Amino acid sequence: MEMMQDDALSSFIRWEKSLRGNLTDQLWDENPEELAGQWVVVEGFSSEETKNFAANPLLTASDGPRRSVDITLRPDGRVEVPKEAGQGITWKFSPGPAHLDTCEFTILKAERPGTPRVRLTYTGYVDRGQRIESRFSGRPIKMTGRVVATNGADVRATDRFVMELK
Image (cartoon, rainbow, N blue to C red; front, side):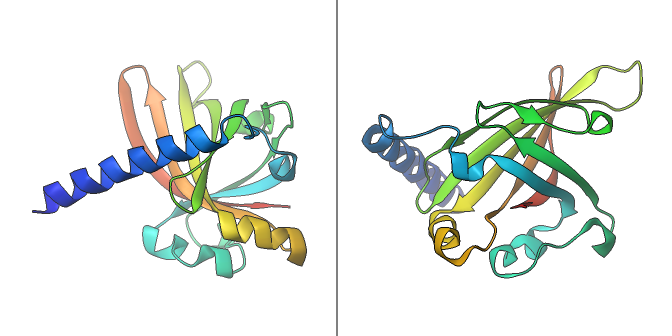
């Protein structure tokens, strides 16, 4: 029963995302100016901790076993990170599913000097209502998401993250 529900939900999400893409492709900006800028990214959260993130202040690396880094999403689609954090690659923003829009960015990082680089793909979700509200309130845009590490054929989900536009 649960498998059928997961399949139905996945099917609906694909349909809704496709529909939203068809309706907005010509108007959609993959690198919107309002998301370009300096963000603080904090990794190491549980799913329970990220549930009410939009309503709460940003939790910091000092709140537990977390890692924090400042990154810059450039208007041209490039990502800048401090040298010790790796090499920023690209970012893009895409519509849907439902009321959430998706921001994805990639960083290459070597665990230790001389070891192969790991591709870290951060996929974050921005509540569309919160994004619109921030234009009027002046409060920062926030997002939560998941990090996936790819090293050759090895792909694994690592941490949840939260981030906030400075």
